[in-house]
Length: 396
Ligand SMILES: *Cc1c(COP(=O)(O)O)cnc(C)c1O
Image 1 (cartoon, rainbow, N blue to C red):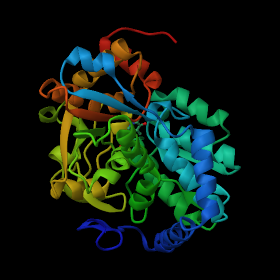
Image 2: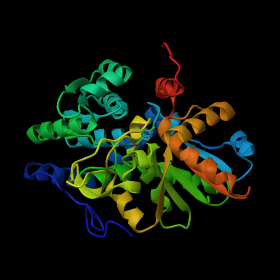
Image 3: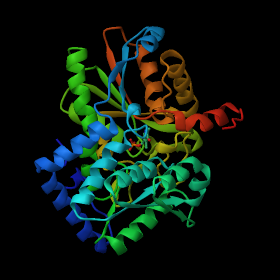
């Protein structure tokens, strides 16, 4: 159905990268295709997923929440229970193992909120690789606990002082580093974004979420769900749970961050109000001005605060296979509070967007209908953002 031509999702994706990187991207693609055929590589990956990361994650029936709503039944795919508190470990482990089998000794990554930096630092530590993380200086200031975590995990954090001193500047620095050092270094991209083969590789490692979910649906519910709903930043947790259902008639919904409202301009929803452009090596929907300059984005959920989106989502939107919607900060906060109160589960603010949409949808459906929400992460990291939103101060 997709990737008809290698590296392309019908006109989206591609490889808009400097010439010096093409060799590194080819090397990565060749080794990836070789290693995923090798039994011992897959066995090692699966062992780490199981004993280190904590897979399989449960599919949990949120009975209290569903009863309170009084409509469709809501199930949660508990990626929040993984080591590190989010789905990011699935991909970080996979790529770090690739790097190791490719005889690389060093891993670099960029991070915005710090979550991907922490996941990268964890897997580098356990696999005996050196990790160096690029992070904008403004982000370092805002995300101090994650900077401390990365350092404790033995990663070197490089402050990036250029541009807006946030994620996109950190990405530029990481690319510069990779161009100079790809003989020894793997660039560990954190979502289904970037030039080919990254969107395909990251999907491969995240699609375990959907495979498990499908299996659990048959065992627990005896049928496939009616809806699967996931939040979309770069789009990796969403592709991860959608992938095994693309050929079924399950309705798939991707939820982007509407921030303070799409009309205010303070949002991070390129699939809702972006246009086709090129950023970070891929053709996709991008938030840009009339001159192609990238716009500033905003969301209360740091993991959704990105001006582009994985190219496969652009394709799935145009194909109308996935419906993309957006949810505002205040709606996500309401869902964050409701799940905490009814189920004793504090969700990350990112999947709170998916949950908010699921709750609204469930109200309109009858009890026979099943909705699965990909609970991509836990919300411990978000307590400060929550308190700030509520206008209360919180001393840790
Ligand atoms: C990083 C993150 C996201 C957004 O990334 P995707 O690639 O869109 O999945 C979503 N949820 C959590 C908990 C995250 O940490």
